[in-house]
Image (cartoon, rainbow, N blue to C red; front, top):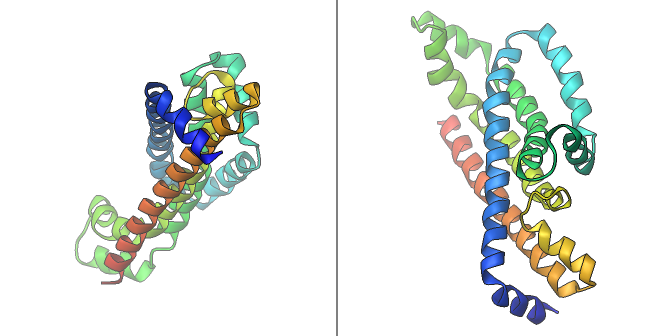
Length: 212
């Protein structure tokens, strides 16, 4: 079966490369949107506890909604294709990024903040020079979790015409060809594990810097 999957991928090389490109582009864009929205929001919420109590309830509720349900909820408003898949995956990326960002900045030692303030730093300087370097490992852990969820869930984009490697799984089911499904499944697994590994390396590097 593995040999048959390999032959199918080679015979359909252009289609395979296009599927990988779409899958990576869709996942990375969703991660970037989630980070752009939720990192600033998480920093803001860490400094305002009443706001965080409201936000945490909403975003924790989002975490229990199945990925496929989020995808299909976007269809009535955005139609089918790349855009609704992108929006749904960005929504999926938001909770772990927001929760970890808030926890990261709330966990910065207040004594360190007071020392920075005593040195004459303003709020912006404290954010970039003190808080962000200390909070970065936990923040990146949230992006790492979101990356794994998004890269694996991008498979489902094929069900609403979003493209990506899920097309091979969908086509394999339709044709009753396990080897075709294997092309998509193995590729998605390799991409997801690879991205998780890269973020794990980055997280460990940031942890080492924070301990200095």
